[in-house]
Image (tube, rainbow, N blue to C red; front, side, top):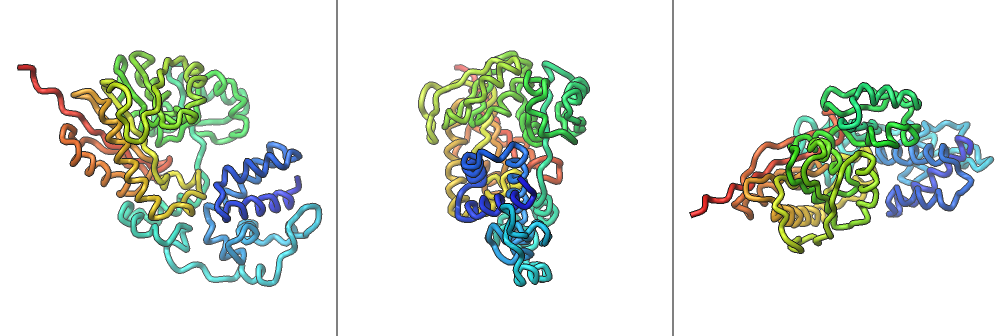
Length: 398
């Protein structure tokens, strides 16, 4: 596909997204119906779509409207040569589109930093003086981070192995097992170090949350909202493969890749049947540690999922906080007396973080609050929150 044809494709996909389809689904549907598009074409179109969504308000102003075409006109800088109407390229620019390039910058903070108006109050509450730099960071692409499986390789050895397959990565000081890919990201999934489990894709902040959880060798550890299993495998690494590692997710299909990944990493992982949002099915597991990385708004990961910030509503946020309360209560019953529950979200919002911890402690007097971890993109990875909640030891017998 020509560069102009890729712009036309991105316009088509963006129109679907603006009509309410999630970006990943719109891109997948476009790819299925356009078998002629190669992997490089699909990747380039995805980059255009996500870049446009990160800066949706700014690009709509520069491109003459909040449409797929308007966003791509804004993103392309109005390069006339790409808008020629031939060979599947987009139609020539109109006079109005040319004039839009001269429109003054948006005046309000949400207009300038590309987020919904209604989010200004909760984001200000959460970020205070860091609001502007954090929101600016969320307008740009996220880096690609890897976690070295320290049971299989050192960071230095992993970097050398990746380099042999065209992937240049460097260690990150913030986390002993973390690498950041500097070049060759598209070659990663073919690299031997990835295929044999020496490295896994995992954001720096996600790795820091797994370390914060404090899993130790010999413990019984439950990842209650395991999803694809990234944190499950990180917990297993910290356990040095010793102990009982359990994964649970309300939607088991999300864990379909966990077992192959665990096998590659040299880990043994059990799974338990989904308990439902209220929990209560099956016996309590008596775990030393339960990690509940709960469903959330994903505000801390808007760089990776930029369409999420435009789809989130106040009603969604309210529903999420109620779900987080249920998840916490369900996960807590698996913590043994003297054990620890770690609550985590990839949200920046107080409503989903501190407020949920406070409400949990009000409902569950056998738990006490402890350390917290707060991360934003200014710390090098996604935005994350984690809180350690200790269950009080059982009273002495007699």
